[in-house]
Length: 149
Length: 407
Image: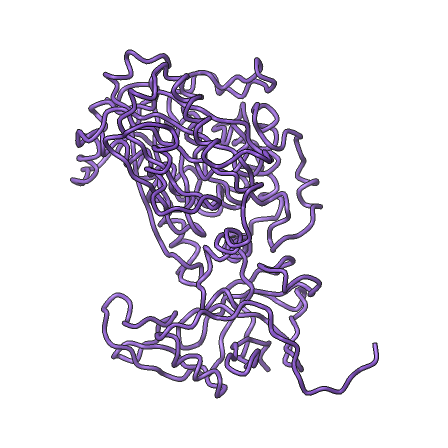
């Protein structure tokens, strides 16, 4: 196939996040390549974003994460949840324990153009990872993680 | 046994009245094109009434679940209309795979409160053949958080995979242990007349199958099937005039630990959360795991029964894999498990078939030789534990069933 030099990205067909008011500060942060975490009045972060702090129902503030953590667990997905994944190499869904003490879901990727999936043999529970920001559309940037160092 | 808490004492008071499963019915299971959701529910209702030896007019309570195909906000009364009955008590229960045991609990509560005397609990669907694309999307998204999990391409299989991988890492559980659950249940399914997969498979067969999401091969996953299943709950007094030997509900329990898999705190918090359901059901029944003769344990994936066996105290933490590998879960083993093949080999209707199989075991009627299957009866079975779990081991409900009235 002859390569056409085009600046237009192919349309993004994979699932996009449901947008709800309680998540808006988070997605505004990722657009600026910042990883913001919701936290209670004591500054202790929690995950996932809610309108009130779970357990106490206190007001929420936002704190910035350093974006570093360890792999708690992962599953190599050979089949995705929709047709948009057909033909892709396996993708790795992981749970990351951020150093700030919250656990979030992500994909493990290589820090290269397009953030392709890490090879399954390069992943292990307990490995150190750092955040990268994947601008999947003009509005949505998904935080993903790549091996640290 | 130590001092029981007031909630346990209250559950015992209710069950001492004698609340029983007095009839069961299962349709064919598998790929049934051309059969509708309500048609299947009606067939399993008819089979259950015939088993009990009563007519539809004698049923005064109706508890249903939900349908992915016939999506309605009023499932119980829509079915009542279809069946041509006017129940005095009706409800729909929707807690995913925990629904079936909870239907039995709701029926017991309604009977104890005097709201109904003969309660039909029925669930079925043509999930395999009849689902629309919107139903499929609803099903696929069911277990994921729409904002913070779904964008990473999480599947339900992979969600269980995340927990299973961590469990195997913490306890050094080999892949063979998961495959042994499948192989064991495949031998049982070979004897069940309506099992979808009747050919036994070996550990090697499972291990060489294609990957879906690690640590699960295709054979480690539960089936998607068409079919329906029902059971009738009533008082021992009322059941005395019905045909089958009554099966007593001797214990009930529930347990919860998280909704989204990201929120699960640890392998042990999940084990304890779901384990509470079975431990409490046994406490209410006044029994210990050693008293059990047979267990029908929810098996959405090969890993699922392992953590449940540990949570219920049947095996120690991390020990269920070896326990299954040693053959304890087989027919003829120490404590036969999923004697109908389970969700992995028979069919998937949540835990409906687990309850029906437990009831048939305690009636001594788990021999399908006359209808094209084989004998999967556990000789002399008197006490069974069964459970269902919704979400990714999020919410669990368990029952202890007994051939004898509660002491």
